[in-house]
Length: 325
Image (cartoon, rainbow, N blue to C red; front, side):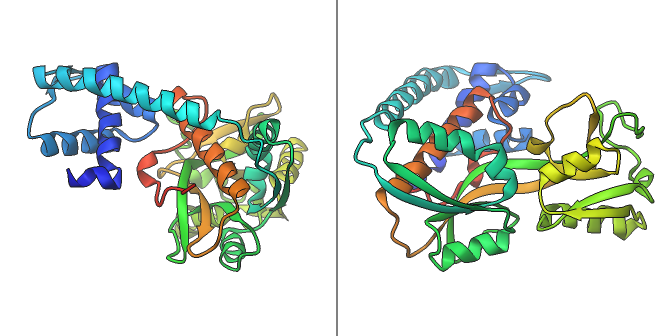
């Protein structure tokens, strides 16, 4: 089977297993944190490859065919064995890892995710140290990787440059945060239904956020909606302070927003994706053992979080060029 070498068959199998387990494409999509069409596409590819129908489709659910039931038993055993193997490999003694790991990332990722990843890795690798540079835009992070100034970078990108390798982490969305009491019109799903209400509204903009600038250009300025820019700041902590003081509202990435009793969080229309976050590495750069191990630990934790639904994220379909040992 040609697709086995590319990993696509394994992704098809994971999607099939999720649908069979949940009895619903929509519930499987929620578990995998991808869209329903993406799940249907993966299952369709598996059926086409095997030449059999695996499900009987009903209006709001699916039922396994005989062939599907037979495959589910085998897929379930395979995936459980793989998870046990992966757990065993990642829990092996890593005491040999020592030295420095250099990385560059965005301020958002550094504050929201990196401390937990570092703490977990340091627990089993106490002789490893980190040199972390944060607060840069994606272009600067890519440049630092290409120039071998760091071991790797973590950033959000709309397109992956040809001169780097990338491993998908998760997909982020944009939301509006505003002081409590600033009323906006929303639909039944809590999504802002009138972006025009932002016209002339006191607004905070963060520097280096290409995703936010893109959304403002495409969906606000292009439609004559011009917020009143009262301040430009370079990190989310400053934005929180300004919002908390009632100075203005702002567009941020969903994982930054959190929840508080002094501000509201509103989803944005037009499928407001902030972009996908990736670990990026140079194509011809030597990767130290400790840096490779840290990348693997991040990817392992990320995949575990997606499977258990602990964090927001995206599809592993967008993952590219897996990290080698």
